[in-house]
Amino acid sequence: MSDGVKRKGVRWEPVAAMIALLLLGAWVAFAPDVPQERRDGATRVKLTIGNLKGAVDWMPARKASGDGVALPSRDFYLHYRDGTSVGPKSAAEMEAVVGRAGMVHLTRVGSNDLFRLLNVTGWIGVLWVAAGFGGQLAFSGRWLLQWFISEKSKSSTVPVAFWWLSLVGSVILFAYFAWRQDLVGTLGQTSGLVIYARNIRLIAKQQRREARARVEGPDALPPSAG
Image (cartoon, rainbow, N blue to C red; front, top):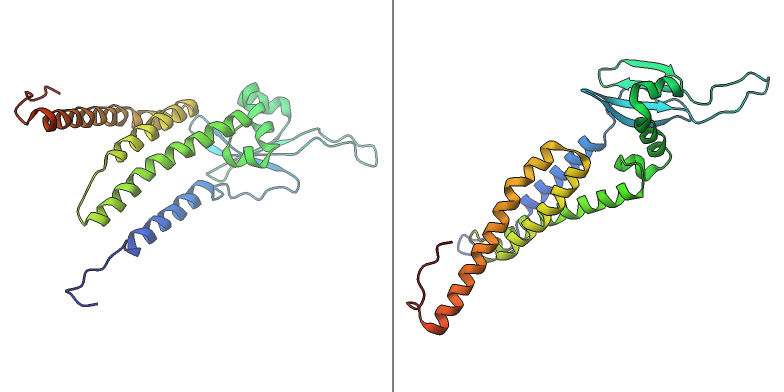
């Protein structure tokens, strides 16, 4: 292509970079982080205890063996990220470590592949995660929109829809991170949420001033105080 001809459309490099980062993030989020092999028939659930992160393998309830020997109803193994393991533990011993709520989390998450994938304990949690994805979609979509408009105009442009998508996404993500009790995520949305709302207000005031100026003339109104 000659230097005098401008290439139109969106360049492929940014799209490829986005896809690469998305795949990297998915690998980091879902790649197994516990090196121990899973026992046959065991369910594995990720677990955090204080500063310790790892996973728990637990076996479902089992009946007595054919020779009449009683088998434990459940046994639990704790596997930490540093490669150490603790177990087997009975249900009562495991409850003493993680509490009753922790046992509900382990057993309910482990009973459903979707719950285990999303790390929730019920369908209400699934709805919260879906809302979180929706907020993230709006939050990411604002940049895709801004990028598309800028590429189209061949200059950096911030459309009004950018601020609305920012506000909607920020509100949803603020609620989602608060539900997750994620302090970093919650704090990360606080300042932005106020700034997005303020920009929308300033844009609305500017549009009203311009509309009145078109009707009454540019000198009819004094400058706005904000």
